[in-house]
Amino acid sequence: MWDGKQLNQFTKETFGDRPLIVVSNREPYIHSKSDGIINWSRGGGGLTAVLDSAMAAMGGTWVAWGSGNADWEVTDKSSTVAVPPNNPSYLLKRVSLTPEEVEHYYYGFSNRFFWPLFHQFTERVLFLEKDWLCYKNVNSHFANAVLAEVKDKESPVIWIQDYHLACVPLNLRKHKPDASIALFWHIPWPPYDFFKIAPCRQELLESLLCCDLLGFQTDLDRDNFLEAVEKELMVPVHFSSHTVTYHGHTTLAKVCAASIDASAWMKIASAPGIEEKVLKVRQNLHLPSSGFFGIGVDRLEYTKGIIERFSAIDIFLTRYPQFREKFTFLQIASPSRTAMLEYQEYGRKVEHAADLINAKYRANGWKPIEYCPFHVESETLAVYYRAADLAIVSPFADGMNLVAKEFAAAQIDEIGVLLLSKFAGAAHEMPGAVLVDPCDLEEFAEEIKRALDMAPSAKKAAMQNMRAYLAINNVYKWVKDLLLPLSHQSQIPQCQQGSAPLLQSPSGPPLLP
Ligand code: F6P
Image 1: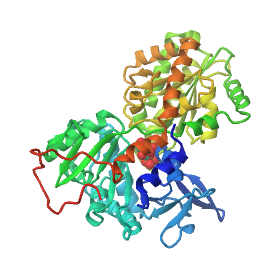
Image 2 (image 1 turned 45 degrees about the vertical axis):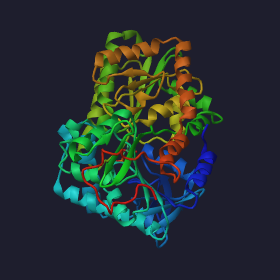
Image 3 (image 1 turned 180 degrees about the vertical axis):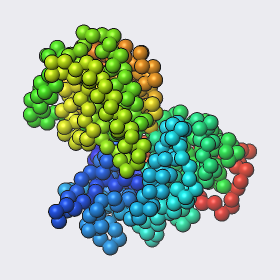
Image 4 (image 1 turned 90 degrees about the vertical axis):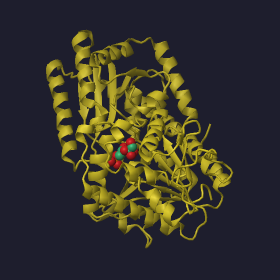
């Protein structure tokens, strides 16, 4: 089983002295000041949490947007600070963005264009030329920050994260041709009929094809990407080796599902005193000892299907009144992109939906939905995960969904059931999860009933399967599997003779340094 030590060893053996740079929009640690005191907190989102474990093991430099109000008070003259703040093991280099850049690059292009389009919410997609120009400009700031780190170094390994930074590879390849460049696409890649809506589609693909390696969560995401390349750029795609050669440079598209530090979750979930806290949670919900506790943990986000999940619970309680006063669902919804009106409006709708259902069924101090629109730290989440008989993860579209994995890892007693949307990337990987279609609400309600009625032995067997899978397929193995093709020894399959790209550039960068 892979752990931090092995990943550290792998990095040394595989990359030797080559510098390792990770690039993401969100930073793993934020410094903020209140009452003259500087404190630090962890950056939001699953991506930063899992990458932090990997970076702590590998070392290197992480380049990210410095979004805290005291971020610049703790950095040196190259905008860098050692992190984790309580046990430094790698460097965080911050990129400064103006409020206008945040508006157009982050809220505008990343969240009003990329996010809805790639999750197939086309009615929410907004493409504005100004956002796109700003996005490209901000991507070049990120690239410059990386280049400043690697300009005198040979063959750096640069690993970019996600849709915020799709134009970084082009900037890097131009100025640092000997770099090995990877980008992991954390969100879904939609079918071509959706992708073709993007006015900037050709530029996006051309930048992504400056990578040596593109990582995807599922086969479907990778195949959708390759199909987009074939149809848009009209170059031959090698579907068997999953490679494309464009302007003389070959890119490997590789599926490698993101994962969590499962052993860290097991540890938090077995902390001393946690059993008492679990009991207390159940008592506070006014549930009888034979009652059931369900949980949902999401960013407050329209792709997550929170309102429809409540509707399924409503149908379930109507059809099976014997569960009234015996089933409570805790929905934790951590605030996200709160400066955007559409997210504020979604938050109001979720709250209203919870209120309506609670008004309908409330009785004797009990209500079916406990709604908690706050961020909850891992230590507390682990208590809820252990207390829960059921977790519902029901997005309409999701690259992976790490909450599904966290819930299973924290199930020390193996008594809970995971209800998982078949549209989440995790559905391809979690043997033993009960798969649901978040659009088919009546069937969804039936699945809730079936999950609660499952025999303890069946629940245990299903949970054991998932936990065994996660113990092996953890974040350390994910990073190792993904980055392996960037080693000097490893060969990304070359384009076969006779199927050379239509556009050849003799001066194109070499595939591998
Ligand atoms: O799912 C990919 C991801 O980058 C997550 O890590 C994160 O939760 C989300 O998308 C982006 O969230 P935010 O806009 O708050 O950074």
